[in-house]
Image 1 (cartoon, helix red, strand yellow):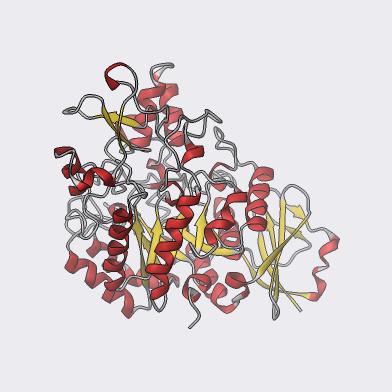
Image 2 (cartoon, rainbow, N blue to C red):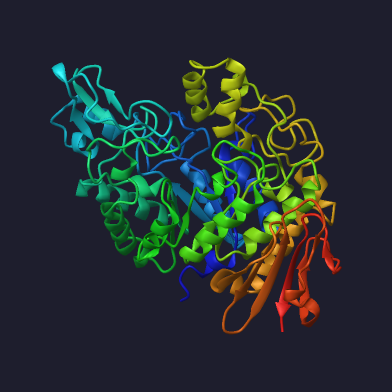
Length: 544
């Protein structure tokens, strides 16, 4: 059996359930909505779907605050609906990957509630409860800060001087993986869902689950929380992941464990693939333009990609997801040949070494909202930042920064057609978040009819990746070129492909060093084979 072959040969389609398809008229997507659109996903050629969290949750962080790991959030449906989803997906040759959020639980989780009620409860040891410092222990146990803003510790109302740790919001208390019982609980959760027939898990902020020490941290960067040197990519984290892989994943005929490794650098990445994870997400690509910049920086984008491709044997390659801004406008300009730019970026994603992840709507070439006010936001990150920054600058400026780091622009309802409700919900129903302004033009139904659309190009790419296994399994070599050109070779013992990408909205000459005469053009987002590259042109050549 070729373990993980499904992941290697096929791109993963990520669905943010609340924004995908509403079938009960409440303005929120649901499991039956996903079932109703499985034919659409299958027609695009996808064999894998990754679902963002569908567990019960108070939705403080849109489901990444789980209150029950073995059930379905009524907002999305029932367990019967989920089991029907698995069955219907199987009929179409599609497997499901679940989101696994185990760095923290919701504050509403039974474990945490029991821990709050009774200091002697065994569940108190499931979390990081510590006495505070200073007079009467009223100061936090250390100086760590959250990823959002402010202290990573919250004092208990009914136990003055006692605090609990949360690297994110106070409603997301961190689990203590020093406790073997916590690890056993996680293994039980994983087996529960694997027994339902899922293919595996995408693990949220998995690089932070093990706190090596609770000592004070250092402020190393404005982009990193204080204390991260004590909890990012620790040896204990690697030991836990090795155990989860050995005890659960490897005991299955074929299953995968994919990790979002927040805060790691490229030198730390490969260790997560040593009997731990099958692929990893890094965040450097998300900030490749610069931490505070949203303008495409071609030089930095290329440098970031090459660094991670050369140092890590199997990346989870992505440009968009539920946490990031849309790729068109971020990595290519949205006002210059956006359709070509979208297809060029898709070509790159499908041909880099590693697994390929596509976020819903990326096949449409969607962009960020044209405008979004604070009152229209539903994102906890944007809210935290707006309130924090708003203490030091005008509200308009504060919101501009908060939106830059916020996540609303990736989370609007999916536009299936140009009717009222855009095929997402019943006409007249108010969606949970406002609709995308260009949904009347950039929608699935309209783009299906356009043979040159990103949607129809994705169909070609899905077939192409399966036709050329070297893309999911081979090695990579990069060529030195001018700033706007990105050229690399994918190769194994039996085949070689040359990928040529123009990252500019201007035409670009092809250097003579590549001698394309003896190479066969097998895919292009333009179809032509001129001596120069058109704006955002992508070509793939088969080397004879």
